[in-house]
Amino acid sequence: MSDEQNKDKQIHRRDVLKWGAVAGAAVAVGASGLGGLAPLFKPAATASKQSEDKNEQIVPFYGKHQAGITTAHQTYVYFAALDVTSSDKADVISLFRNWTSLTQLLTSGATLSGEQKNKYMPPQDTGESQDLAPANLTVTFGFGPGFFEKDGKDRFGLKDKKPKHLADLPAMPNDNLDKKQGGGDISVQVCADNEQTAFHAMRNLIKQSIGVCEVRYLNKGFLSGGKNGETPRNLFGFKDGTGNQSTKDENLMNSIVWVQSGEPDWMTGGTYMAYRKIKMFLEIWDRSSLKDQEDTFGRIKSSGAPFGQKKETDPVKLNQIPADSHVSVAKSTGRQILRRAFSYTDGIDPKTGYVDAGLLFISFQKDPDRQFVPMLKALSAKDALNEYTQTIGSALFACPGGCKKGEYIAQRLLES
Image (cartoon, rainbow, N blue to C red; front, side, top):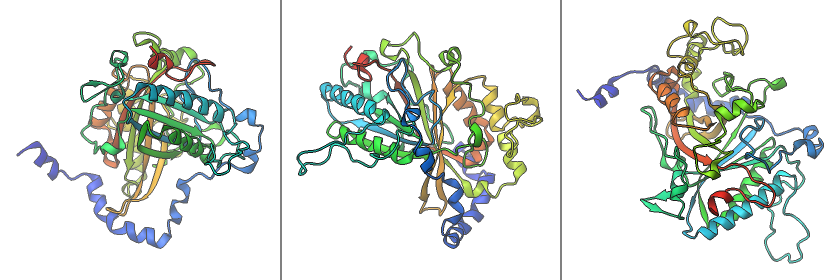
């Protein structure tokens, strides 16, 4: 019997629970009017927060590194991947010049709106953030493998500038990848503490790219803002990101995140961004016992503490948690990355009646082959969480370092 046939005959907990869940999902949704989904969404920023001094909600654009990487985690994200349709390098340079000007303007709290004499022309700015604070807006750009070489062709004469670790992430056994939900030549990550501010920035960036790029996919996500700086929770109800190291420790970030040598010059001060869109089977998870959920993660759900400990930040003792728990498998690899994930919800899957929801997993690391890929392989092989999740989108991008006033993003790459 083939491995594929054996696979078909295996009965997982997810499959058993699915039979009952599918039958009840449509009824439950119809009866509740989606009222039960309210806790999944965080309301927009309050009026009092919006009225704070704008200067306190500005993340500097210029600097050694791009913002939106070690920046304090904002509440909302719009994440897009674009494919370059123009074959002219000059078009790409012009686009990044325009994107730099626009990003600097928007992150400083300004807009393109002004007195427009010709009212028969479309306004420069779409206008929906005109009365809003900058809300800690950041924009982070990256380049996928296809930007440098596609179908064996050196597209813009930059093949020799391709970072040495930049390649498609290897597919894992539990993946069910949709090409329309992964890959891409250019990534644009927009984060802010106000959803409309974030959307406005992404909308206008895309608007400027018309004729040079086309959007491959666009996802939006949110983060549950914990009280008093508490670790946010994912849609399974567990704290997400406990293992992150302090982004204020410059030496630590240099060892985990920032490229300093061994790469093309334009990557100095930059990093690699790993992106995984992970669907969560919430209805199945919700039918699992609390013990089963905690065994799956290896932490206490209410406090976030590892088994045998009292506090979330207490050290993990691998001999006290299930060997196949998510925490145990991740910790046993000994690898460190900087997680910057967001939850997402996207209505109802018409095929199953399930809520289409999950995690926009985003992480940053200076060497994905040494840091991220080994962790990915280990988790794929034996993580108990695989029973409840499936990756549907995957990509890796190289994010250039930041820029100084008078420069534009990726100038060291595009004009080298």
